[in-house]
Image (cartoon, rainbow over all chains, first blue to last red):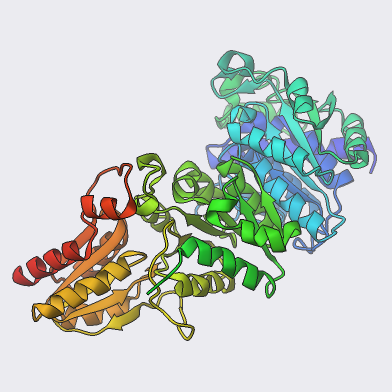
Length: 275
Length: 311
């Protein structure tokens, strides 16, 4: 799949995000929009998966550690064929397979129940350890938020991943620079990030998190790293693709009203509120 | 009645059952010599993971390994397993229903000289409140071995509470344990003593003292604190004049609470709880602490007699 096709999928995913969060009346648009290209590159280019066989033993796995970005993951899984696109309409509704934060027991393709920040990398380390023990060729991916790395458990897990030399583990850090209460370096600076991960003995690579070619190249680079876990620090824009949401912390966890939804969808190349 | 510590029996059970169950892996957080998982490490080094002093990560890694098909036993001291990592256990292990067994040692006041910071008196409460969590409190070495195998065979999260000091043997080789089933150690129709862990031994002593005073006590080992054995409790409540619970845990939220909650709804009878009365522990020898905090056979006897009188 070339990057133009990937870009058009990313554009559809953004429309799903806006539309479903508007319909749900709550959710997290900012951090969902910032990681769209990362997830599209993973699910449509990088990961070995079988959407019709979601529990295939040798599948690659993604842990969405920044679980609040699940509207993006759900849209990508639906577009990839794990479940019908129509299912996206049920986001956050009673009885839905699409919970407000990921529930692996309900959603085909969701590999970990997350949402409580800081816990995804540990789970990914556990998966990578078990897969290595079994001699499996599968890789484990984990998507971290930049505010999320303020959680101490992330660094416990980072230490363990390097200690066990988990070269079947790739982390991607969605560096959008904002968290609920403001800029990450104003709230509680986790910077410098590259140096921190290097100091924890990870192989580190930085790229533009909205450039699909750069992302696929970075993911291939991570494949080639031996004897250490790899992290891709992906520089992104929170709210990417919707002008009034870009770089505005207030859109971290707020649903757009009907008017804002129409404006957003029109910017994203589809004027209709409905599908 | 020479016995060994339940933690020691746990380490031995891991070695024995590790040969049978290839998916079994063991994780520890730098306490493997104390939790006795080091016994497993010695025989199966490739299936043992010491994650260092990082209990939250311990639980997360265990969850990830379970997600990939392993049966992880995660061990540390009870206060850290259930306190430090409670939210990890709740959200990352229990909510997805992962097949993780949390086997925590150094529970209760009999930890002794290390003092209050290391004496978990709240762990049963903290684990019991989590949906889908099974809570098992073995009383001796044999029962511990049975509990470990039952936990392996059970699909889903299990909490196993283990103690530090040696405890007297109660069961022989023929004993079999099933989750949700209590063990009736002796019959009696005046009062039922429902105990778990070390306090089962104290309950048996209390029964002998009561017998000397003409009171017939039934002793029930409720190793399966969750799920409780409801039918054994109903039978005890309908036959006996009163029920006394005994545990090396706070009276708030533990076995005593579980029994009282059930009987209050289903078959109200006088219930007295022997346990730590809303206090932190302190340093001291296990025997001194059991006495100081009201966890002896004599305390059970006193509560039993008062409960019968209150009927």
